[in-house]
Image 1 (cartoon, rainbow, N blue to C red):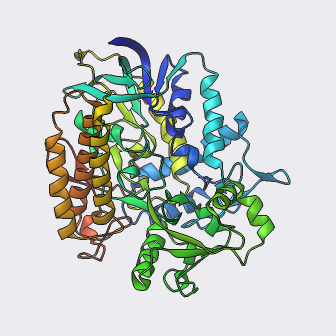
Image 2 (cartoon, rainbow, N blue to C red; image 1 turned 60 degrees about the vertical axis):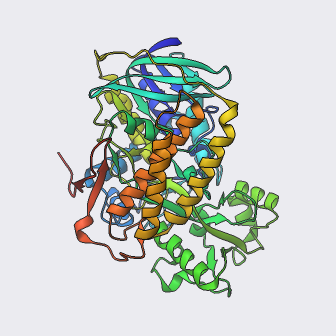
Image 3 (cartoon, rainbow, N blue to C red; image 1 turned 90 degrees about the vertical axis):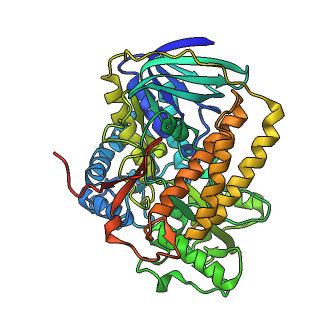
Length: 527
């Protein structure tokens, strides 16, 4: 097994990973590992934009308040304060570095999205912000000679001794060869896990492997019962869910039921721009009432020339699906989109495992609460990616025992085995852990996920079997947390407990071989 040594290893090449690698390179050598190409990530496909206080009519206090409201009482104030105040600094730094945000008459154009009280969403390339921003940071990373990238390489083991990180094991897909990486610290930026659902807006790589590995080596997970379902994903028979950005509703699109009536106006003062959990739940109820599998998004009342230009990428993709977004009613339904919780971290991305850091969607920083505010995610990548790199750089090389792991192999003979179990679990998650949940359905799912997890606990050094174990572990942990939370809040809605319970203003913490733990929300800034 080939062995490499770096000061810092970053796992994942989304915006969080690229940001962490870029800033970490100021302090030493960096390896960045990604299971696909460097430009394949959730960040790359983000359409909406990045939220930051830059307008004259805006303020950090307003952005903080909007985030807290959307988070439904589960945001940690200190983390939100860091996000908003340092977020503006990170965005201005990007602008100074040459990031080409969209402008009009020399001024940056600010958009509006659900849950925001001001226009504060910066875009690039219209509806291709994630792509443009990730590409910009990728160029910065590739300019650094002390950053070495390992593409088509997936991490399969994260090792710790006691409470001390000691290294990671990875497989090069192209050569079926195992590598071992030793470093002072590892920054997990492996993204979310919404592909454990059968209907998702995420790329197929978003299966939560990094979160499962962190849990397996003793890291705490927090708030993983909260999954954000994006309200407006195209619902086309036989096709993957295609995300239609919240910015489309920000420009005035309407949601219509099967009778052609707007329904959000009677549900929330912000109508179509209500927080995502509210809109997704309302769409779900409309689908139940009408017995249909979608509602409609309509832009027919808006200026077609402006819409076609503003949403160039979305418009082109919809044409490939057979729709004209300026004239047709677009069938939409919610799809699993964002992992609100994740690996629990402090304000510098630090976890309870010494030397293990996390940032981006894989992290649970306390910023998102029970429901992420639109376009805060790219901002979180920038802020906590930089913070994690700075704290990781301060680490001394650990003296914990470096393992001599057995290789894990790719085996095409078990490909169909993995697909069978993956499809079963993804279908179960959609049915039992979807927008509306109940005890009876979740208990049944938990039992089955436990069976699968235990069946593949001995994965026999086979990569496909390891993936089944990881997915079953995550599905089990998500379902268990959802069973424990006997209330409805944000992205977690239970038909048997339909109201918020003030006593559940807590984070549910899960750690290997321990019972779930409750930790109170931080309501004030910690000096």
